Image 1 (cartoon, helix red, strand yellow):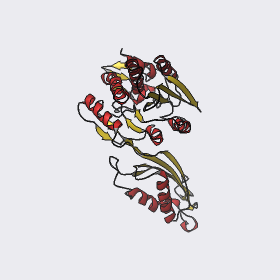
Image 2: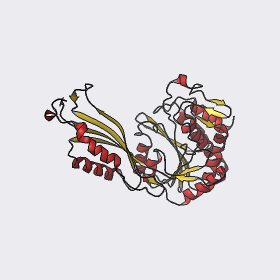
Image 3: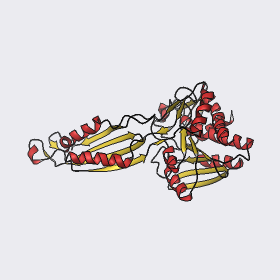
Length: 375
């Protein structure tokens, strides 16, 4: 097996369901230390984080990834055991193959090869890994970024190995991500008998116009390569289970995915004003997953476009789509951030997989990016 396929299989064989690292980072730290990296293990709560650096001063290039994976679901639904890496017809199967143990293995192989070829390279090459990307994302990169801010750690460029490609390796370059803001709205009413509505107050009836206005609103028309901000209601719950009882409370869960026209403070204020205007008696609990970030045209974006074009045979699509990634915590430190990784067709699915030929090309892609930025 190739170096990257062998390492990816070693990682997949460790059942690191978030936030359990299952020994992945120790394995990787041992290899990186042997290559000359300084490794710092940051155990925060139940989460393992690894910060490995080679070189000194700036510029600082960070390879950002995660060793945790989502649960497998029923193992019987998989063609082969999700934690027994299996190659069939040129495809590597296993939980984390695409998201993102394949990229993490490629990071490490690329880093080893780069420092072997350029032991006295300018600047700093760093690898940052967490076991809390797929879970609550509280004590992972979010917490590490706070520590870095306190320590004055400098980060100029960040490459996240999330599976970004769509049909072939390198056909998409992610240059930003939308922000994510979730809410749990509790609207208070007065419970009563449906035959005596004058003695009750139905929170569903009261909230319906406000929810309709929220759902119909056009928040903006987009921002550069970002789509328009959107709000989606994900759950509505009320009632006692009896059809002759007016409920006393309504619970509504909704989420906004928003572009840089907005931030969480502005959205929360705007929505509270709308709910107040409708005269609701309510409380709302907000959860801020992360603000949007966008990498403008510059060295990192130009180099990535050129390198990916070489690998894919055509210039990549430059996108800000998808969900969120840990780069949202690195960008506020002043770093320019991009995401480059394998095809994402099977992530979080049964029989998650990555093509072996594309996995084996991935270290060279990352090494080319590193050489163009630090070589």
